[in-house]
Length: 248
Ligand code: NAD
Image (cartoon, rainbow, N blue to C red):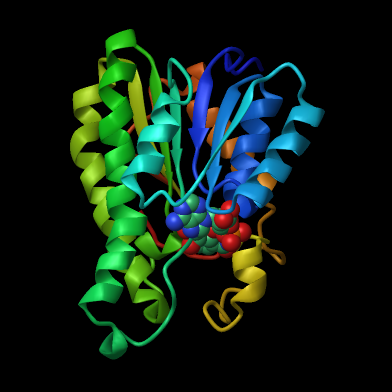
């Protein structure tokens, strides 16, 4: 199936590892030019070089810095003349006990996992709509469906982003712009490997018998970004191998 991604340009945030890297890789594999972001220049450049080597026909631009930095967000959207696709992603907030979280801790989580995504949507969605094509995919968490007690900062900020984007999705539907969320359950990434205390009940997946491969999420992301998925908007896609049975 031709996804129609050749010649499109995608911003992929937090793309130096894990899920973001996989989304960037599959988009490039499908012929999209990519503008990738992560905080550390050297790691980001190394990933950019790998993707360029694997897919020499696509343009790969690297913009280093945190998505929480307004200058970085501006640099991302102005790195190329036209943005067709936005994949919002960032690191997850730290685990802990809500009794220990002060206002600054909350603001940092809101900044990283809610406001940075909303700001990037604000900077891109109307331009996409004016050209009649756009795709926005937010990487959130299965915690939107099934809150995980120890990551309350994630439960709250991602649910807020979800409701925000569902509120605006309709406004963009007739203009060719879709907005969807992918909700990872346990995926085999650095975050999961390094944070066994965060998600100790998630490090295995007894239902699927394995954790997810980030490239599986990359493929889902590329499909949602494709011209085949124009009639899908304002949806949550839980990818967890059937771990959570949430009913209808
Ligand atoms: P990862 O640690 O493998 O990769 C995170 C990436 O984000 C890295 O490239 C890092 O440099 C980048 N990053 C972190 N903070 C950033 C910031 N402020 N600005 C720019 N880049 C930043 O993690 P992952 O597992 O791929 O997770 C991606 C997202 O998915 C996270 O928000 C995570 O909480 C969420 N998630 C992951 C899982 C899982 O099982 N892996 C499950 C649920 C939710």
